[in-house]
Length: 69
Image 1: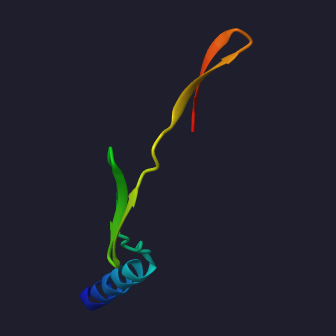
Image 2: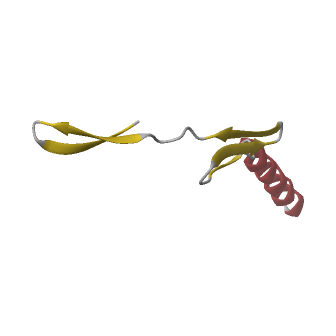
């Protein structure tokens, strides 16, 4: 009887181990700084300059409006 319980516990633990689903490990880190933005992963890193924000003030129907691109 002891062996039957031991074998049943082994089969149950093996079945539980095989049915658990593992997730993929994607180690990618991205950051946005003041001057640059970039991402680093297992295949390398990429750094991108942010485009400059251009703002100008225009008058629309007597109201001063600030337009940024």
